[in-house]
Image 1 (cartoon, rainbow, N blue to C red):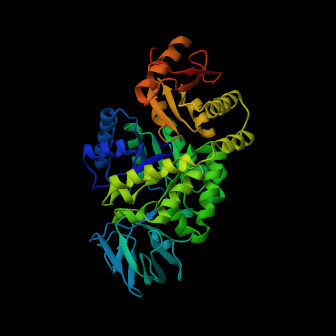
Image 2 (image 1 turned 120 degrees about the horizontal axis):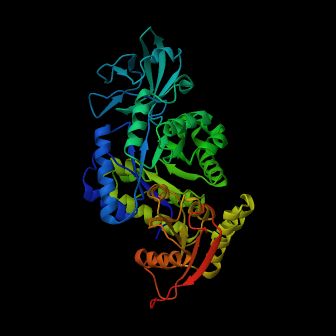
Length: 474
């Protein structure tokens, strides 16, 4: 059973409940809905189907909404994609026009004020580039310097453009309120520049009475990388958004940036996800490239909590095969991860509070005894997340009576979130934990499990662990 989480980005070609259920059964833990490409009505329909799939598969499924952020995006093209030929001249307008290979407009109505002569405009992930050759009051002219196809809603990059845009646009404000109303689990924030951008969203969640939604900051610019520490302090996790990040830095630096982002996320005990081009060849092919396999394998060794499969799922021809092969690669990489070395290094680098010390002892005992599972009782999720941070070889059952807590654990490495009733005493904890283990895990007689949690029952601190051997006669 894999421990690294899979996030699947749903697109308009995936609409039926059966497919979403298949994805969940194949290994998807969280579903991503990108509000740059679907309407709120479509998003609501997806949310209802994901919740129904969760009930039918008896698997807790997280829901992540991806916001636009302070991005400039192309308006809808008159065709599915348009080819911009080398040296062709394209005029950008401040107002909406019918977009094609001679004229374009965007979601930003003062674009001409942001550009200077000779600026290079990059569309999408850098495949198409244009040079500004003339500027007027409400439009400017460009010449294509790198030809290629463009699509509706693709981002465009102009040097330092994000510095001049407010972080929460009117559209994003509406989308955040929608997320609160529909009680989603995570918000992915695009083009985060610093901690103030994140705090502006946190403040909005608090003001609207819903501060449990997890905040995932996408690192996709040089500026966000430079401010990574401060961003991590106020976020629940970060996403290595390799598409836009690779367009905004020298591409040869991307592997280093990915490793550093994941390393710092681990040091701060926050979620670290990797996105973009993981299995891009499978958008059209039935099997991945060898390089893609190695890429996914190495992400596990770099301690990614999860991977986001986007185009491979949302527009790919073989989404089920993508999920299946990803799960196999993850399991193989996890088999060869050095759990003992990681445990000792992590313990030396972390802070030594009671919960951390107990969590270390739990994971160390699980390794020494070759335990089959760790059963972590938690009210807030803190206990299970601490244990996940130390990365045990076995799975973790994150048991909580709090529905929001259970959903919040869907992205943490190794945790299987389980909603349970509120236990009244220690004996009930031990008995019900074992029952849940037998219900969920394909167990064997004499399996060793480690139970941990806090006493009294409502305590937010982890202060006990107990080793149990499974007896089928119990």
